[in-house]
Length: 184
Image 1: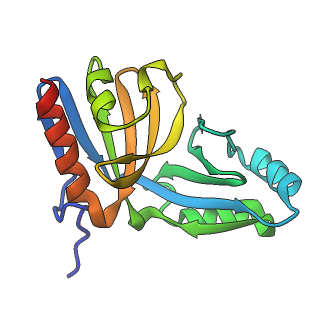
Image 2: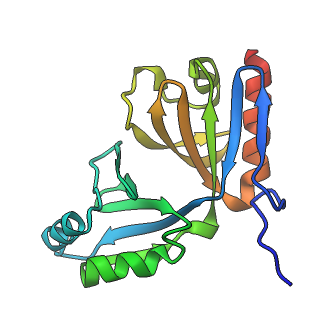
Image 3: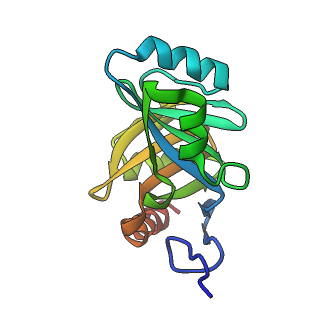
C-alpha cells in the first residue's frame, strides 16, 4: 500500500524550533498556477470575481477564504486552498474560470514552510535581500535564499510563508536552520 510522504520523506509534517524561530512544514495546502490567456484579462477578472478568487497586484497576496492567491508575474498568480476541500484544485479552478486562463496543478512541486517568531527581522535580514520589516502584511515576492528561488509571503511581522522547490526542500531547510542558529 502506498503512503504519501512529505517533502522531507516523512509521514507527518516536520516542525523545527531554533530559539524563538519555528519552522513548520505545511502539507495541507493545494496549489495551482493561473495565467491569463492572450486577450482574456477582462474575462478572467470577471470569472475570478464570480468565483471569489482574488487576483492581487504586483508584490501582493490576498486571502478570500477558502481561496487565496499571490502575484507571480504579470497576468499570473499562484492560488492556494485547503487540501481537504480542494484536493483537485486545478480541476476546481478550470470549472470556475473556464477557458480564459491556463491552469496548472502545482501542489506536488513545492514545499511550504511557515516560519514564525516574535521578531522575524533578524532571520529575514540574513537569509534574503528583501527588507521584510518595511513591507506590509500581504507582501509577496519571489526571492533567493541560499541560491534557491523561493516565493515569500508576509502574513504578519511574526509569520511568513516560503514556497521552495520540493526537490530542494532539504537544502532550503538547512539554509533556514543555519541562518536561525546564526542569529540566536
